Length: 146
Image (cartoon, rainbow, N blue to C red):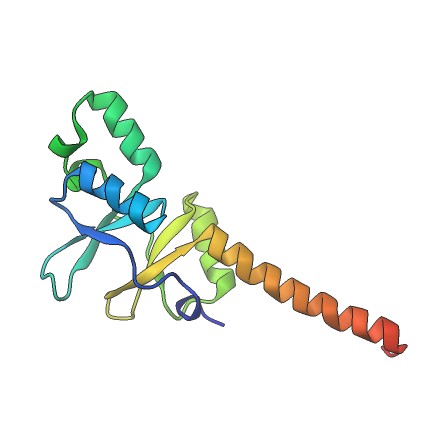
């Protein structure tokens, strides 16, 4: 199974000029901890960065400004890790671990934003695989086969 098969779709995204107050409200409404920041043609935007709930808190503390006066572009992590939709689960885990991040935008081969993958998504997927494997072992033990 590839990352594109179970990433969160559609991605929660905002334009780079969006005020942080709008980003925070969107996070609250959509129950997400990260929003992808996009630039370019609205019909085919490209990923410019990512903003987490922690980024918003840090921006508010360090700037001591109203969130409506700070743009997404000023706060985002630029050049975020991008995971390709056809990457394997193992590759996605390795990429997240190498960069030390918990979330990443998922893009098509041509760079179009498709979704977001998180460590939580990967953990849930892997837990399901392990549970299925444990079911096989349990069934064989009860049937007396190997």
